[in-house]
Length: 140
Image (cartoon, rainbow, N blue to C red; front, side, top):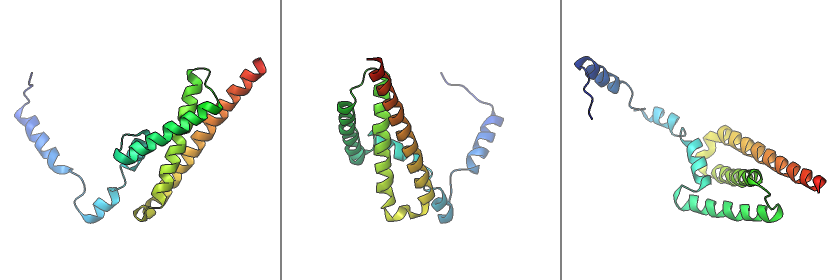
């Protein structure tokens, strides 16, 4: 089902389309080149980014298995905390890998923020998991 638009709307759409199609100058392109870093970082960590993503996904699965051996999950909440820990550890590994790349030197503050956030989230999940484990041991 196609919807027709007025001639006025068509002209307005064409005019708006001419206004912004991204940066044209080398300086503008350089300025926006890291805009997708956040999404790219997450995508590689959860395993959707080609060979590198598959490797991280395998690493995360192995880490998750080891965590679950040490702290067998009692319920879905335990499983969620364990997954959060594994994701954040792999995210930190990806940040460290990015720090070593020569073309990442100009986004050091951004990487530092990712590192701090991943550390904070990992530590919080670990504390919550340990607290649940202690509560269970007291109840036994």
